[in-house]
Length: 66
Image 1 (cartoon, one colour):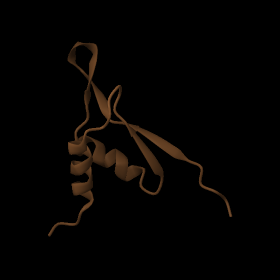
Image 2 (cartoon, helix red, strand yellow):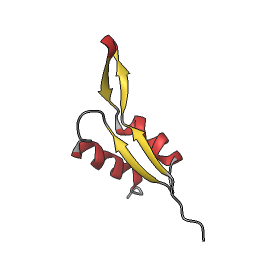
Image 3 (cartoon, helix red, strand yellow):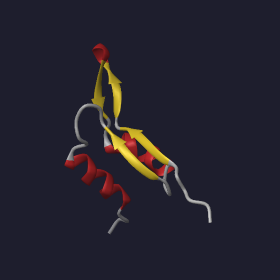
Image 4 (cartoon, one colour):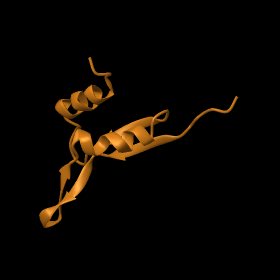
């Protein structure tokens, strides 16, 4: 059996005015993360950790309504 060794680093930030970067929202990240479904994904947000709030929002997008 072939091992799956692909790991994807998803960048959770976008360029902002003034040459700086801002954190991406869950809505901005969701399509990118859906495209990577089935792979191990490492979410990278520049020099700081991905916020608990963003993680919770992303998890909420995966939950079926109801």
